[in-house]
Length: 169
Image (tube, rainbow, N blue to C red; front, top):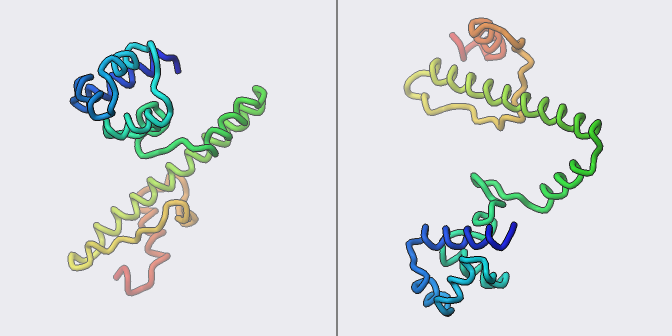
């Protein structure tokens, strides 16, 4: 990230917080010219000041500089994995890509099945128990009773087989 990139982020954060350079300077105990210098890329705040600035502007350093998106934080482990991936040759990256896609597809299928099961439960439970839905973590749901491509009727029949006699009468 260049000085200019950091300057743009700092200016955008300040304006999003609804502060003028003068107001930000007063709250930070700095001169307005210092804020202007940071926002023009002529200088940069030290690390401690950067944390204070982000706090003042209602964000974190991670969020402000793109290391945290949608509630996900990129940590040391993630960076290590990325570095390992980049150290692989083309064949190694290709293998990792295949496995990653396969796992991503598997999780998507599990989530879709969990949604189908929850919808089925809501549609087939008595009104008094309509709030009772099994909340099994997606990674623990087995799909052994269903073949990929089964019709909804076939899946419902497979679900009935797995229920106690009293549950589906």
